[in-house]
Amino acid sequence: MGDCHYLYGNVATEKRIKFMKQLLEFVGIEGERLRRKWVSSAEAPEFVEEITDFVNTLKALGPSPLKREQKPDQPSAKVAVA
Image (cartoon, rainbow, N blue to C red; front, side):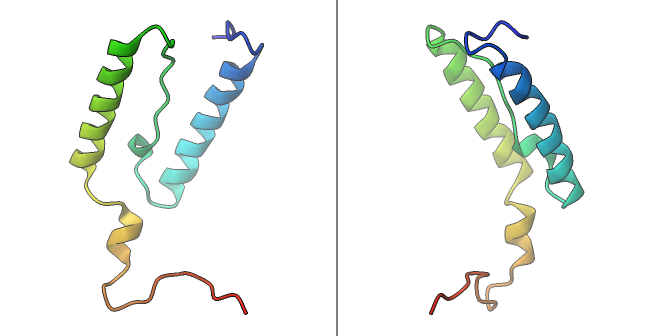
């Protein structure tokens, strides 16, 4: 931590991710749906492995709880602009 060449970007990101996970869990969405991983542009295999693992995690969690709450006969929550 703190060795980001943008000075403190990774420290700020870590704080934001922690807060966002808490916020997601507060509204009923699993915190595992948000993830961060520090991967260098020179680490393509690590990037592929991380994305593959994240996709598998999301598949195991199933559909978003927000999607499950919306019934097929309900209109979407879009707002019409006049």
